[in-house]
Image: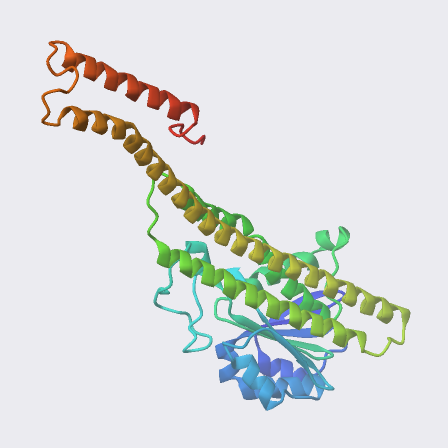
Length: 373
């Protein structure tokens, strides 16, 4: 568990939840408590006591179940005292979360196939409970999104970054949006690797020298992309609900507070735009795989047509030759050329002339022409 006290002057970190509860609400700034799902499950009572000491409110039982649920889709909910946002991350994790034991790392390799990058994409949910002076986040085990943003947050608090104009989060809601934006941008960074993996599938599908038979892996890849599409849709719906809820908040009493409210709405719309970019990219990849499959079958059909055309042309060339040999093979004494010494060679020359003529005819009609590559 990591605890941060964020204020305009800087950031302090600790891991003593009891000391934070005893100190009570800070006079300036707000508190960010980031814990894993397993830690939240074990220290649920201590976390509830901390929330009551700092904000005078505790999480309701249904929201506690949501924060511990490892299968919950992205969604937004609220009460009169706090807001809850569950956001499924899209990250290339080195470990997968175990759905049987929330908060624990999966010790066995997943059985599904497909490109390696799709097998490594972790979509475990991250839960945010936003109070007036506290942000509680519940992460999966080994959450790279939390650790990456903590590093950025500490760098932003340094004197060099402050001199360069870097701004620290001004409220728990602002911090939540920044973490969510970090998770969304993390998937945008995976686009190049994911596109490269799917381009490899398309190359195998369209290569005429290989016989593609790895259909199970291809089906798994399409199912994985479809699942990502559904997850992104849930993310977009959750952010849209959050934006609509922010619009209903009462106006701030001071110009500074109103400016922070406007910046919060702008950041919310920016995160929503990033999610829409992810949705567009996932759908484009899904359509690209579907198009590659269709092109594969079209190429196979075209190759079959070429083979049948070649066989038909060969049959058409040998058909008159078979007719000539059948004609001269009849047991009649009055057939022409059979009593002449050069009759056999004349028949062979006639057959050669017919064969060459048919080959030239079919070539001019492009029946024997190879398709351009």
